[in-house]
Length: 135
Image 1 (cartoon, rainbow, N blue to C red):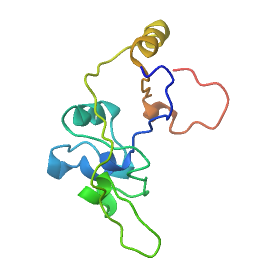
Image 2 (cartoon, helix red, strand yellow):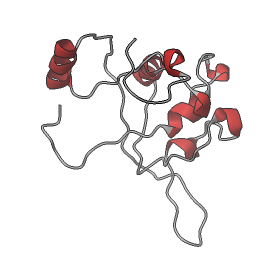
Image 3 (tube, rainbow, N blue to C red):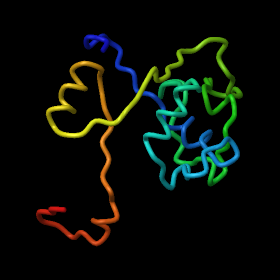
């Protein structure tokens, strides 16, 4: 969508795993223990998200002590000083989202609108040990 303009934008997962929780109306998302990208897109329709330069991934979310706060959205830290929230920073969102299936449709979606996410039903591969898997 940006015609390969630099810099790349890498949205941060930290606001999602800290801020999408049962208190804020997202009972099925479990922070670092799992979630659903459809819920993430729905959340980003009405909430801003920042990039990884502003909100680094901390390996913890709302389920293990890293609760949602303005500092989770964006912080800057200088050596030997307390971290602070910048006066201004870039935010991103989602204008629309939907489902697409099939390789040709996925390819067309990427060409027309940019990156997509892909998921699989992992319960069928819980005991996978190697080789080809066909389900």
